[in-house]
Image (cartoon, rainbow, N blue to C red):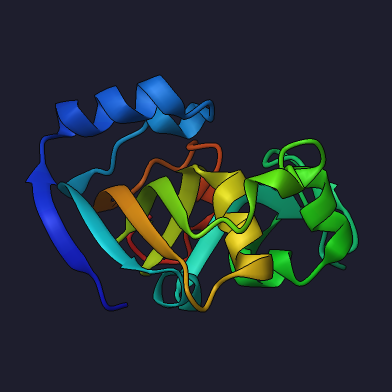
Length: 167
């Protein structure tokens, strides 16, 4: 992913942003090693081309959404999620108003596993889903991200998404 790191931030700064904006339980978890936090900019297309996941999950057939604690929960990339009109509607219903025009920027909060290079978006989901579906080619994202490896096995979202040997 091509990105421009704007600045390194402390874990405390990352937590302040995450606690103020993100609702997911995952915001309270930390990796066992190599913790690093930063803020960066990149093109939405670059961001979406990686192993980037929502904190939403599907059943194995990818026909319905399930909770992270469902024994059959499967991760779904934002790219794949955005190709399913029913899934997109569950996220965007009531959120997007046409008079707002095209969404061309998203401010996201993510958690990234450096072991398997997968990340979860824990805040900014509506914006990035809209961009993935309608405006991926010209939009940009600003990402506040915590990275590391060895995410806790009981972490609600990363336990489904992380695919590395460091767990």
